[in-house]
Structure formats: structure tokens, C-alpha cells
Image 1 (cartoon, helix red, strand yellow):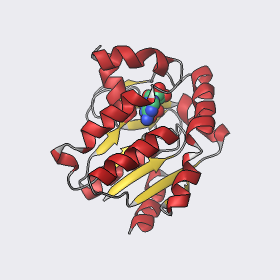
Image 2 (image 1 turned 180 degrees about the vertical axis):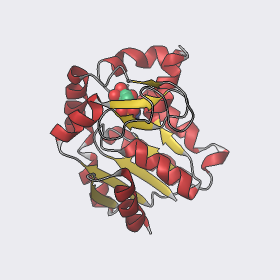
Image 3 (image 1 turned 90 degrees about the vertical axis):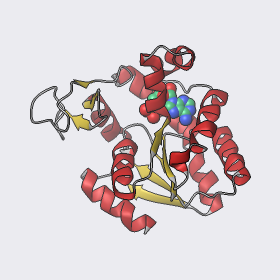
Image 4 (image 1 turned 135 degrees about the vertical axis):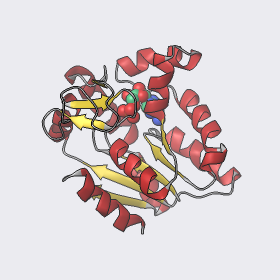
Length: 213
Ligand code: AMP
């Protein structure tokens, strides 16, 4: 199964991608995670991406397209994959379609998570992630049992540097201008499925499973 998770920052794509990965045993490909790791390891890719990410801007298309092209050709993607945070522009979507066509593969579904912008700001400003396993928490709505510590692996939780109000507003603007047009792109292809990203992660996951079954 090959899925694309679409939606603004904070819509729950990462959480749902992790749940799908668990249930179906297919890898989650998060361009944001790959880029953050590159930045923290100070690799060439990280050096190129850092300033864009810090400003809430998109990393240039050619960089992320190359990254995804390599990734989806890896052996662990042979049984399918979940794209989380890619594509984010029409150019990225077109290049993805071209690459999949060359590989004689299709996307099974594009799941779009719709969430009110005010709710997104609350979610993102309170978000905390595990530095080790990537599990996500929220100061108010999903607090860990022990403050600052991951319930799953005991590692330290951190706040993403781009989860501050100024950068969040920029990211939401970029989403509206660059990424939201993908809804029409995939709707025309007939595989867009829209969900209200409201409710608990488990409730949304059950709707996701219904959609793709
Ligand atoms: P995310 O973790 O998906 O919110 O992504 C964090 C940041 O990584 C974004 O604000 C962008 O700067 C960059 N990024 C992630 N995915 C992409 C993409 N597909 N295209 C361009 N930039 C991306």
C-alpha cells in the first residue's frame, strides 16, 4: 500500500503515519524527519536545509525530490510506504508521479487532514517530541506521565525550534500558498480522501483505516 498524508503542520500526519506504520508494517517517509536529522548531524543536506527550516520556508524542490526518489527505491519500500510531508508543492507532486510511473507503481490514496488554523496553533505551540523514538506529546492534551520524559522509551522530550508562534504562522501561510493546491491536483486524479482531523489520535486512526480498507 502506498499512501500520501496531506494536511497543514499540526494536522496529525506524523502521528497517523506512525500508527499506520505499526499496523501495516510499511515505512513512514517523513521529509521533515529526514531533514531534521541531517541538520542535527550537520551533513551537507542539513547545511543546505537549515536556514529554510528555521524560517518556516520550504526547502527547495530539487533537494527534497532527489531525497524521495532515492528513498522510495530502497528495499524496505518494496511493500509500500507512507509519505508524510511530501509532496508539498505541485512540482514535487508532478515529479513523484513521474518517478512512480517509471517504476510502474501507483498511489493508493491521498489522505487530507483538515483542521481549523486556530486549533493548529494550539497544537503546535504545545507539541513535544521524543528525541529518540519520535513519539509525540502535548503539554495539555497528551502530557507524558513524567514531565519532559517519553512514556515509551524514557528519553528526553524536546520542542522543535520551528514550533514557535512566529514560525508557525509562516508555515501555515506557506501551506496555504504552496501545499493546499495539491488537494485539487489529487482530487482530479480521483484518489483524494478528506478527513476532519478532530478527535483523539485513535478516533482519527479508525477513520483512516475505514477510508483505506
Ligand atoms: P515537517 O516536519 O513536515 O513539518 O517539516 C519541517 C520543515 O522541513 C518544513 O517547514 C520545511 O522547511 C522542511 N520540509 C519538510 N518536508 C518538505 C518538503 N516536502 N518540501 C520542502 N520542504 C520540506
